Length: 353
Ligand code: SAH
Ligand code: SF4
Image 1 (spheres, protein in one colour):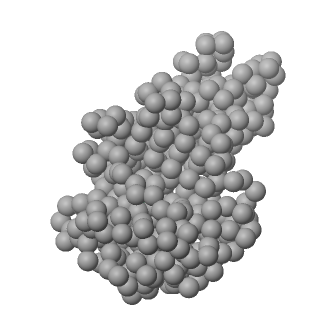
Image 2 (tube, helix red, strand yellow; image 1 turned 90 degrees about the horizontal axis):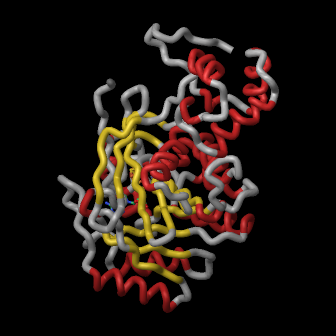
Image 3 (cartoon, helix red, strand yellow; image 1 turned 120 degrees about the vertical axis):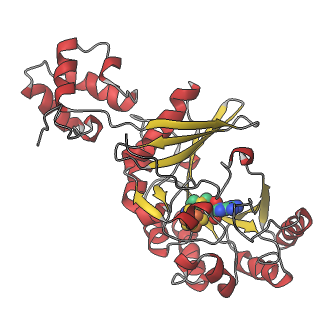
């Protein structure tokens, strides 16, 4: 394993990238008793420590030895905004200067967190502030988990659910997303139940197919926004090649394989996807399948001609879906006064320190 020397301007490796086996080897190499490995692992994984100083049952000399070789590359909070509804949006910056937005949504005894999976997004959806700004880079699994840890520590609460609905397309970063889901689900981590971990995809079919095959019961949401191909192509040019026909098939296979009910997200845009034929097409897409629909009034984004549908249209679509036995929820966006609502998380690159 390569070790970098402190003070040379090179970044030390993150100690949290070590496996339990690596930690045992390290402890042996430092001629420390074996039980120290267990203590260190507990700090790193069970307690989500973010510095060596927190490891109070580890002798100072050993902490110093660890700090010579490893670091905690945790993100730095460079800005925060607190909404009237209690939601908090954080701008978190990683060591390379790239920053992402994370939202914490406390509600009575629950704490939901919305995390980013990429800095920016390359899918280019016409109605999404993140999509309009392009992709900077994908995040690592640890960087996703660190967003959750940051919110948990800031509010001093256990996180009860996580939605992967911030910046980025999770299935364009599939392996890291799955690793993060597993870390959050692990009892040696945040220990969040699989059903309370939700991934939202714009409809990347190979991702949905792989997701069908994993044993955990994570929740899947799919951004549909139109069940008419030409409209969807215009709204979501990045997923043109994954046609609605094939998407429908993949979702049927998903429900057959997992017995789980996917959520379809439908952001209603005035005059675009709230017409009679659009409503009919959505009903056809859903009828007879296992699904739940979330109807969201489009959140305004700057410099966009797209406008939210009137509430009456949203209620009409909900009624039409109900009449064919499809459950639909009209979702209120939280944090819209701080631009933290869906699609309003915009990539901002903050200059490196
Ligand atoms: N890339 C993933 C997850 C992040 S976007 C995806 O697209 O599913 C999270 C959700 O916000 C998606 O359903 C997305 O379509 C929706 N969204 C994006 N912009 C929006 C806007 N302006 N108003 C309402 N919802 C929006
Ligand atoms: Fe990316 Fe999702 Fe925004 Fe589309 S809606 S640009 S996939 S973050």
